Length: 95
Length: 95
Image (cartoon, rainbow over all chains, first blue to last red; front, side):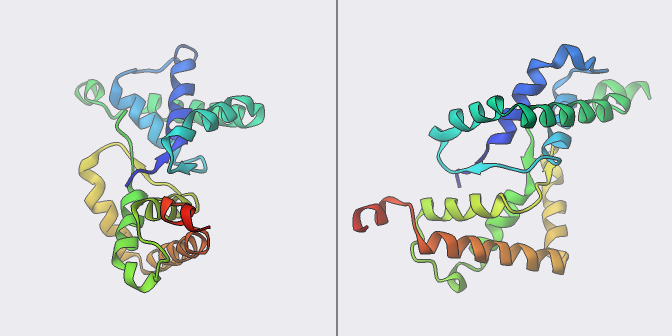
């Protein structure tokens, strides 16, 4: 089975591009994965079969200003949820 | 990045379970991937971070009768779309 949800890369790109501005409480892989999962569950998936089409579809998302803004706000919300209560091992010990 | 959309396996399970009843025009990998992508784009994603939770969430989908019925009807519709106009190499030659 080789289907891909292009939104995984679109959201990952946004998370990395705005990581500094997000002021994450913790930037470990687990916390970033939690942010990815929360954000991906809030956006309509865009599955494709042919990996060669990925770059074009990703570019389309960058060009779509309103769409990009919506995705950024979804990532900001997800980052806030995770920053308020990180579930990673760094925070399990302290709480 | 290790996030998983559990719906990929839920849909794949349904596709394999009902493959005979779907009377696919073509059952090659490409056509089944096309059916998966179309169906996955129609259902709400369920991304998780921890692979260990997958079995529990998959089981939940099987137990949820109404949810399972909705997923089956989504797969049936996707199968019909692909069967009406397969995009795989088997059919490119004949059309």
